[in-house]
Amino acid sequence: MAQTIAFTKGQGTGNDFVIVPDPDGALDLTDDQVAALCDRRFGIGGDGILRVVRSDALREGAATPGAEWFMDYRNADGSAAEMCGNGIRVFARYLVSSGLLQLDGDAEVRIGTRAGVRTLTRSEHGFEVDLGVWRPDDAEVLVRAKGLAVARPGQGIDVGNPHVVVALSSVAELDGLDLTVLPALDPPPAVGANVEFVVPADPLVQAGVGSIRMRVFERGVGETLSCGTGVAAAALAVRHWAGAGAPDRWTVGIPGGRLSVRVVAHADGEHVLLSGPASLAFSGEITLA
Image 1 (cartoon, rainbow, N blue to C red):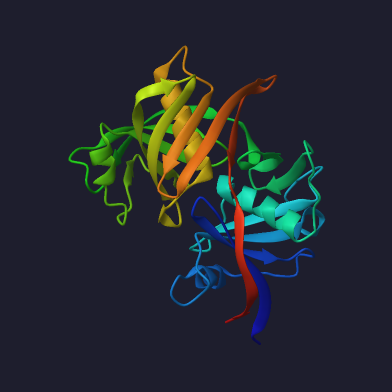
Image 2: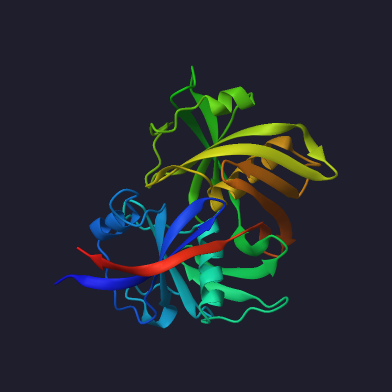
């Protein structure tokens, strides 16, 4: 039997999502249904789906202590993903706008994800999310992409989901990439990875803030206008390459706008925080096949 569900469309710097409220965990969307909803010609269109479900209603048994809400993020092809930096800010915007959450002043909210619980606050840019402790990967990865004459070394970065960051020599080289074609990673990661291509600004640092430009191929989606965790990974990779004295604040230009990244020392290690806008476009109902 066909089922009609409510939805809201939201976006953060052009990274767009179909938000599906399911507080009691009654929905069980198949990969094909997710892909149909995200289809830009025959569905609503989006880079992924954010299912809004209470943590205590989860069927998969994810542990999200202290988080009332869980962000069930699925890529546009239906595959489940650990984390989404733009998506979680859009998720918070939806919770506040729909009256499911009150977030005033300096208050924090904890939201469950497959990468663990993430903390968000309001910021001058919209919302800021603490993505947790980041880790560089020492494994050597070669990246081949259409538009690059030779393979380039990639830096693995883990911010709750896997990324490989590639440095390019110029804006012209960045603009010349054809990211309609999946970049090839050697060796290929077991669970895949998002791939970011970055160009440092000249000068790299101004007034204590680093600046880079980036394009991204998202695992399970393709090229997107923005990728929040990818932005964080790209800034962290360039900071890692720059060595001692590199700044802890970064701005990252992506095709969908600009996001801010900062690194803060905690007892358990360096945390990376991402901030930027998040907005809701429209709501409606759609019948699932």
